[in-house]
Amino acid sequence: MTGVGDRQPPFDAALDPSGDRAGGRLGRPEGDARLTECVGRKEGARGGTTGSPTLVLGIETSCDETAAAVVSQEGEVLSSVVSSQAVLHARYGGVVPEIASRRHLELVTPVVRQALEEAETSLGHIGRIGVTQGPGLVGALLVGLSAAKAIAWAGRLPLVPVDHLEGHVASLYLRPEPLEPPFLCVLASGGHTLLLAVGERGRSERLGTTLDDAAGEAFDKGARLLGLGYPGGAEIDRVAEDGDREAFSFPVARVPGLDFSFSGLKTALLYAVRELGEDEARRRRSDLAASYQHAIVRALTARLREGAEETGLERLAVVGGVSANSALRAALPEARFAPLDLCTDNAAMIASAARYLEPLAYPSYLGLDAYASAA
Ligand code: KG4
Ligand code: ZN
Figure 1: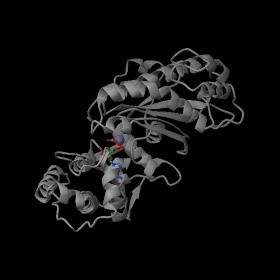
Figure 2: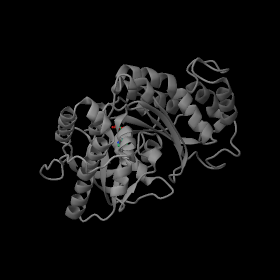
Figure 3: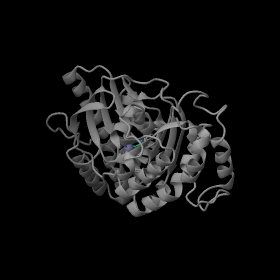
């Protein structure tokens, strides 16, 4: 086994892209100092004082959040740092891939460093690195993947490439109340809407998917039509609080099987806004938001319950960014949701998945590529 002392120089280098120990271009000087201190300190650091390192470091950069987290093998979240770029992209009304990649590049090292600091641990206690391989923006993914490879290589650690969607499901396996499969799960994010029968950790059957827009996309596009900011889901959630969800009757698309469809709903909102006219639509924004949100919530809850009836699965869950929605959470008291900060993109869920997925041994992962779309 490689000792902590043996690992120290390459691990420091892996987290210091400038090569400047006193504080590089991107780092905070005091952060560097503390990291150096942490690496050499085994006693008292989180992760135990004996045996092989067991903590998992997760890295997530698939879209516009730069995130790193430290999770124990048992699923305790020791730290979860998420640096959102939302304000950077807001003026464009959506994520600009090139801007996202450049920002990830600036943030990935300080964010990893902060995750280690907040977990009161060091790279010497990390047993494996989990990183999002896809789906997502390839340029953004490559930043996290390259950082993860460099850190893993420097420490001769195994690396676990994690599918982002598996990561969302794995948010349910974290402490304090890990959900055990089998269960039926709606995964609703900005890019995907899936109904999954999860048989065991890492194994699920896809029972339904969206035929057009994802639920999160419907929230984002709806928010844009209502003149709300980006990202739209949280904005609609907030504005809908003061609205009457029965004020407008928006349709829930009926498609065969257990699939979803949201594009008709978006068009219905567009027509409603046009019919009301700009001023009236603004005056009734809360009612429009509440009614629109209610239609998405009805679509998701209906499919989850229909799926439960078809499969006989009793445990229900919802994951992905949309699972942060307050109306959805209230509409499904029988379902499990991750805590709010683990619903939207984060690295704790990636580290969680990396606990049970097959790792790639050092250094076989160096040629690993990112992928943009789900298989
Ligand atoms: O999982 P996620 O953070 O990123 C992707 O993997 O896409 O999901 C982002 C999506 C966005 O479309 C965002 O508008 C939506 O989740 N979202 C919400 C809420 N918070 C985030 N949708 C509805 N209500 C919310 N409170
Ligand atoms: Zn996501």
